[in-house]
Image (cartoon, rainbow, N blue to C red; front, side, top):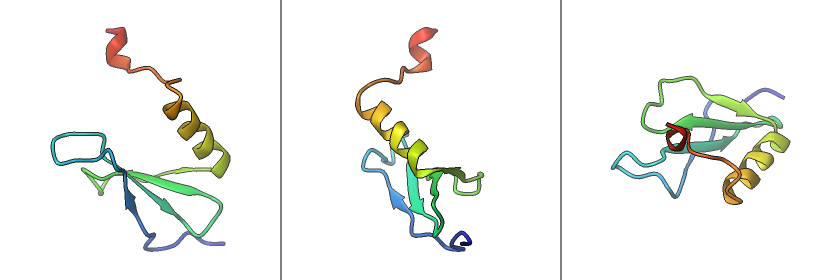
Length: 72
């Protein structure tokens, strides 16, 4: 199955106009999830498998990621 030429993008509820975490997510018409930076939509889109996307969401909601700035 081919990726949708114009996927239906959904903006993160954490995105804002003040430099917040600006992420858009879309279902692609394939078994992939597309992710892009809503501040610069000309940049490349990242694609993840449903399992990888679920693992990412689980890790972010449980706090299993650290902020690299905290290590500085």
